[in-house]
Image 1 (cartoon, helix red, strand yellow):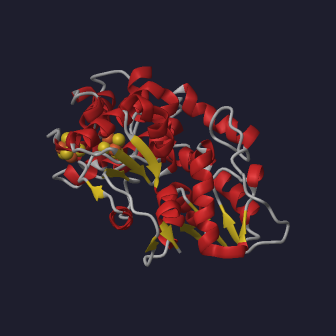
Image 2: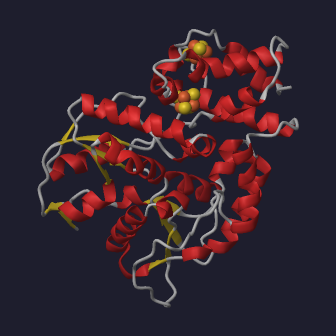
Image 3: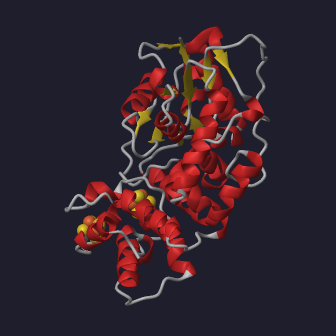
Length: 349
Ligand code: SF4
Ligand code: SF4
């Protein structure tokens, strides 16, 4: 069923379970074995050796993983577990196995709306005055940013302050970057979508985006794309001091959290040290399409960890996590902010 290379990686696993410690789903389920990465590998091994049969539940379990790669850090054999799970999805699709309905539907949504998710109004967030003059730099919002109007606007204003007059928007004609297809294992469809996205943004010399996954996809297509958080100046002048304890939850595979922590401390926050497994980015959106409740319980568990450490505020860098956390903030009684709104409120630059 699997390629030699993938099977070799699966076979290297000694089932020690160390990787479970890094997994947000494992912690959100009160450390249930069946929610962690070890069980994902064990299921695939059992199926390949015909000890078990492939079922809808086992395929779904392979999609309840956010590709965050925190588990990789715990593996004594240095198995790239996150990547292995994506490879397994890819090879199952190639072998004719259909992914869960909401994942399979992404392809159709992109064909019809150039957008992976159901019912979405791409251009609605824009409150800014537009100019028809051609621009050199494109602000590429990405799907989850546009789902949170406040973050879309705060990130756009930050980009505008840095880039000045040369920032353009595609509004409702912004293409899909294809990243969700890539991690879902729809590799061929991902390549097609990327080509289409490239043709739509080619007139710009440069792209800035608040979404780390859009940046990755657009770079893979050969375009210049930069992560907005990266281009925020280091020498910010404080104009309003904040107080209280803040928990920072960043995109998983990046090291930007050091810069974000610095910004929060400059703003006046006491920043608590969150456990490793408290990270989230748009890789988790596949799990969200399968179970909204599950993703909310993952965010809620992270908020409880923040409260336990004395935090009264949670600050998010990634657009998908900001969307999930703000949707449950009232329930968890913690303030939720995106990093760009703090930058705008506390600094002059
Ligand atoms: S990549 Fe992240 S979500 Fe997936 S199994 Fe590893 S820790 Fe869990
Ligand atoms: S830590 Fe590595 S060897 Fe241990 S169960 Fe996880 S993948 Fe297998």
